[in-house]
Length: 493
Ligand code: AMP
Ligand code: ZN
Image (cartoon, rainbow, N blue to C red; front, side, top):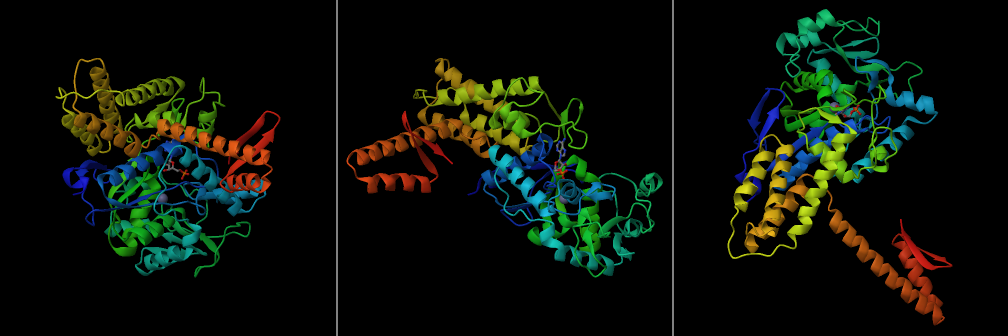
């Protein structure tokens, strides 16, 4: 029996504005799509917060025993400088400024994104598709939308006809915007009269001669509109209707509103059962954003090289800090806030170390089953990580009480407490097990030092074939020996 069969998970659906009981479209399977980064610069901590919210959601589904297909894309074309579809493509602009190929920019910042997420102990998604890898699929969707009468070609570009769509559908149902207000408030920012209505959005944009990211299409040489890639990639890998679509709150409009419109115009039905939006990370009272310079990079936190913090903080503490807020609340980043998180994190880790030393009794005076139930209730209530963390501290309080001889636990309950704490801390919240990692590092050091000793003996016996073999095979494993005056040391690559 899978864990999810005993749990009733509620998720806040941005579309209905209510928490709804989650039941997947296909029993035991979850399909989840999250808008990924536009890889034209290093991800800042704000971006990371949104991705971390969905990493924990992914982890919790896995913990419950679901089979999850988690798709998180890489936007490597089509995202213009301004979301109102004016300006250069963000990647093309960076490539022009740095005199690099656009794909060099894409590669550099995709690698950065993966490195940061790896440091923060993220699980990789099941599929990480790119916009440029799905140009054909995007063109097919455009053709269907044209055929269904909701898009029109104009001067080499194709636009989605928002007004026509709204006659039979509801444009604005996710963001709560009203089309009349939009019409009253939109200016035609690019000043070009290609569009029938200023609020129409591009499905395909004609590439001007200087635009370097360009593809042939039935409508001429151009590039896809930003919103289209997510429709193409989500439906390709998850089907025309899937369980969850997520992203940051700032993507609700226009990006996700346009996605819904594209899907409905193409297939006749809404793509997603649960729309989920993560709230913003705030710095100095304002949204953290690259464009305003109001941001901090994860590496600046890990090294302490920044002007905001008094010291460096580990990836685990950074992760713990973010998860102490609910994903739908805004979170203020500051030196004081992360310092307080570090204290809490250390208390949690000390409690875990103490747990190994507790002596079992013949009776339990605390109910571990009740405590465990409250941990699940927290996560089942729209992934409420701050409440879960409060429950984990309650578990640590139990440990201290037992250690002080004020309460007792049986061996079974102690083992249950330990397993549950580990499951929630490491598997669900994704805090890496530093204790285990440092034990592994100690063991590795012991083994390599033993090999160095054996190599020294081989050399002393003039058995150079063996000493070279030890050196070369260690090197092949990524362990480099360095002979110096003080003896032999090693480094792990
Ligand atoms: P982008 O690379 O601009 O497409 O953004 C990647 C993700 O980061 C999107 O889901 C954004 O909503 C999210 N994001 C951007 N700024 C913040 C912020 N300050 N706090 C939380 N999420 C953010
Ligand atoms: Zn998207």
